Image (cartoon, rainbow, N blue to C red; front, top):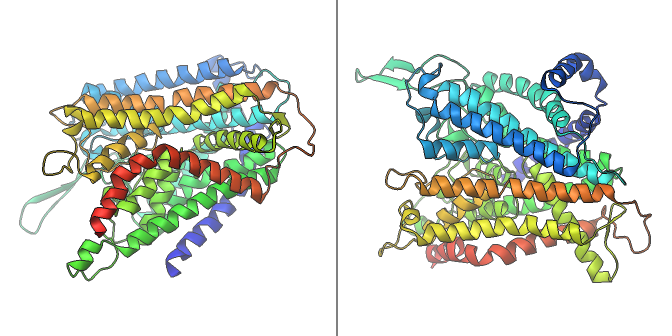
Length: 572
């Protein structure tokens, strides 16, 4: 039981953070954060004037989607250019060359889609300018886009007989100016106090005991680390990510990093309740997320604590599976971090998921396949679980033979079609790209775990499945045994993973905005005897059941071939 004390403390602190932050975000997106606007209002208005934004002009869902796509495309091109030109840009003390074209494409797509998949070692591939200008700024932009889409959907649910969802540019400026930037400023200072480095100086060098010179790469880490976690981005400045002592030095920094990953997604549950005038509904959604999260935490901790029976039979003295884990954190911290980072679309790691036991590794894999709605990425988790809410309410209506209603609005065929598209597109992307990786020579060449005849071992299968799951779910973590960027086949994984990231981001956002636009036009219907309540335990159970059943039916065959077969092989 002592193993789970950390988990209880974590959820208690999460609630304490989520309530005030969620209520503050409600005021920010309504333009009612009067105190902070007294300080930053002049800057906000100046940005609108410089950019030619008409603050009072709202967008239809199509205009909102168009603005979002244009902004994302422009920022992706800028990041691609920075990576390709880094050898000519300043702040490159180690004289790194330009990033290869396909790797630059993969990386720019990755950070645009809030995936932050990294097929490279951060400190050995990217200059300070690329890290601070290209990647850190994109960590803000992609997080901001996700939050804007979530708020647009919530507005669509809250409004009645309206054609608009707000102004994308206004939402984008406000989320950066009043939420992301102020929090990250203080967060980065906290990280520096814990030992995270922040410097523009070159590598640190000193004489070793054998007379040789030892050099350690460094750079502006704390500023990237703050938004990496708060924005559920996950891209590490160092290749070892949050297992590196200069990214995550202490148990306190480890706890705060986990907390910051779920802080905004959890707070959006409070924002949802406030904006739709049903706080209990917001807490019901929070409860569903928490229930699934607890299942994952218990499972991951259990399997990693039980350890590897092969080592036990060989006489190993340690029962737990410490392979690939930082001894500073151990199994409980690592298991919690793993569930937190894959429940959200973050991908930061303080342990190597490739080293987990088969069923311990199944937990983060399934977290992503469920749509990363526990608690999900900033914004992405909220609009993802609301799509499942619509499906759950629709199914409840079918079961009782009544027209389904959600928050006083009838769910029609258009809503269900777009919700189905939202669920089906990731499944097709994950399974088809995984098949392509396993059936082609270029795909198989990157698999490190192969059987005696050259065919993928079940763990090798899991590596490929994990890669495309992570890319499509915009997570970015990996079973790192997969060599995604090899000199033999540099294009295959860079291209296909980049496509999977795009497929898992923008078609889903368009489907969500279409639902939001349709919902905003509807009349409010007074609650009646046939209305399904969405603020009680029955609703939470139905929502959890729909999420788990959809995930199990879709991905169970693939999980059986990979981690489940590997577990049977390990224990037989």
